[in-house]
Image 1 (cartoon, rainbow, N blue to C red):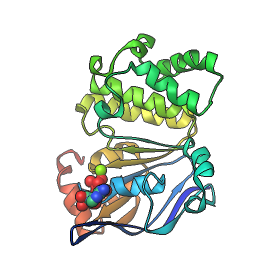
Image 2 (image 1 turned 45 degrees about the vertical axis):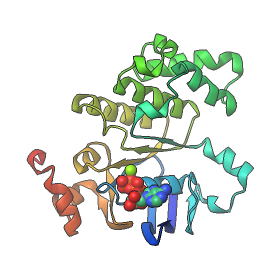
Image 3 (image 1 turned 180 degrees about the vertical axis):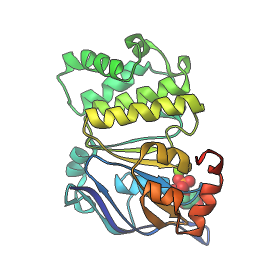
Image 4 (image 1 turned 90 degrees about the vertical axis):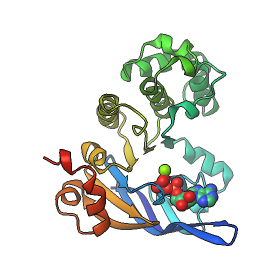
Amino acid sequence: MEKIRANNLKKYFRTGNRIIKAVDGVDIEINEREICALVGESGSGKSTLGKLILRIIEPDEGEIFFNGIDITKLDKSNLRAMRKKMQMIFQDPFTTFNPIYKIGNQIFEAIKFHKVVEDNLVEDYVVQLMRVVALHPDTLKKYPSQLSGGQLQRCAIVRAISLQPEFLICDEIVSSLDVSVQVQIIELLKVLKEEFKLTVLFITHDIGVARRIANRAFVMYSGKIVEKGAIEKIFYEPSHEYTKKLLGSVLSIKT
Ligand SMILES: Nc1ncnc2c1ncn2[C@@H]1O[C@H](COP(=O)(O)OP(=O)(O)O)[C@@H](O)[C@H]1O
Ligand SMILES: [Mg+2]
């Protein structure tokens, strides 16, 4: 079943007298419970597309269907109810959390706001999720600066998962981490996808990382999707010159 569909999405930014076509007529479809990758070099429009799909920013044009409902037509209150089901995790875990509050409080707050479980059960609920991502519950009592990038990214995953989303966008979430930690987070995400029945759009500039996590990929270049399909096909038989260029950087680990 189709979980997400975007038709002809457009977002142009105007800076001075220049127009940047960040997202320029994108069609995308993501099936329920698949991990799909969105690959492209820096500046190709990946983050803008991700934010459009969740209506974190508003499209100039286009339709976005979530479970068959066009969310571009929803008003604020209906959108808020929908938001809980669609979460996004960002690249830099050090800006995801506010440095002056303990991690736990920041996670609890979102759960209380969305009334996922009763207030007196929130802490137990989060402690369980911390176990799922292999973090000690005491981590909740720490400040962001006391944790490593990998630990913080696990906390960001807990915060997103705690709201019981159906659809998750991960925007370069392993890009700032060491390679060994990247692999751990990718494997964790695969487990979580099964356990929580998630549909995931995994954004990355690294087609090797995309291949590790996704079955299918969209390749984005200059605001447009230039190639899409099974990740193995894209990896071994890219049809677009741009994809070949992206592959150039991972050829050494191709076998
Ligand atoms: N708020 C904004 N205002 C102006 N230009 C923007 C804004 N957000 C993104 N852009 C531009 O849109 C293009 C796509 O950016 P982005 O979606 O962040 O790409 P990516 O995530 O693939 O690196 C870039 O040229 C970027 O500079
Ligand atoms: Mg980006």
